[in-house]
Image (cartoon, rainbow, N blue to C red; front, top):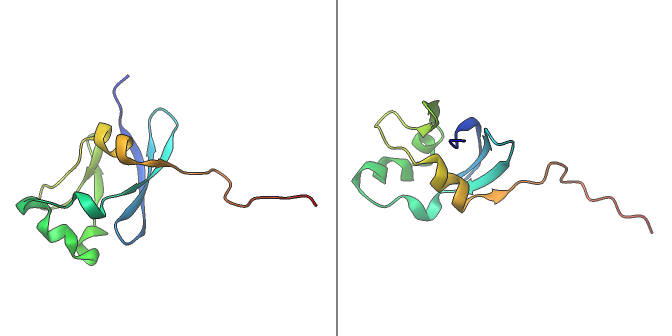
Length: 88
């Protein structure tokens, strides 16, 4: 199965919550990945927020994008339920 981005939502800073077509949801922090001329505009957080899903990954209007496999690799699995319930 080819890895694809199904849904992507901005969280904060340079973090995006991404749901992949294999059912896994990950938090991807791109703060340290914005090297190179095409990624320069993405350092502006207002511009960074304006991504969209194109084909099978996230892309910005200047053509910058990341391979879904790369996003998956650097992402951290998001907990479905962030509320921890402790009985005491």
